[in-house]
Image 1 (cartoon, rainbow, N blue to C red):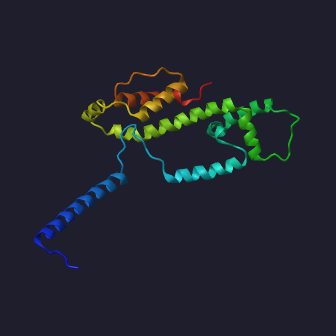
Image 2 (cartoon, helix red, strand yellow; image 1 turned 60 degrees about the vertical axis):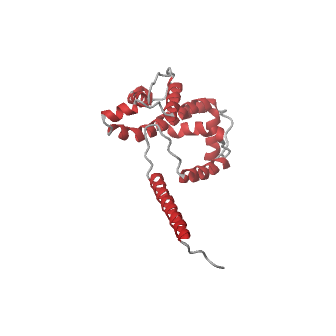
Image 3 (cartoon, rainbow, N blue to C red; image 1 turned 90 degrees about the vertical axis):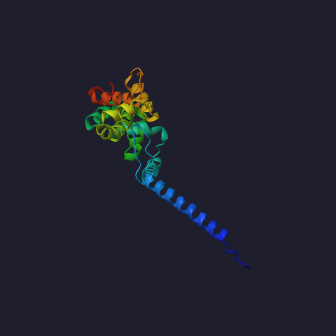
Length: 209
């Protein structure tokens, strides 16, 4: 089989090589961007795959003791309590339990399940607060250093952008949990400042009575 080494074929190879160089440069820029993502206030942060592994593994253990997804918020509330809060809830649960139902073979797992089902509303209240606080603190941890380094011009530019979906979601959760009216927030800077001020107020750090 003969190959065409005419001047035209050389030009074609040069064109293909140029295209390949551009493609490789574009790929390198993409890899660099993905390796060090720049997160602006309220942007999405993707879950680390290691988190999913731990969640699945721990979940499998709890399922063996009869817990399911419906218990998640109550369990979150139980684990977020202080020791004194837990003692108070345990005392409330003791008043509900039938004193004649003594079972010496009861495991910690079965006792945990019983507690979650005896006090679902009380524990879920703590769970909602724990969920809100985690979301709020993650948001502030991401955004406060970013905004602290912005110039006045940067802040003016931020004020030209609408609130992000992450900000609006966190604001809805905050308002729902604390019984607040949804605020009027014209831009992303205003949304950040509203969330910052809510977190700075000590009463929003406590579980509602």
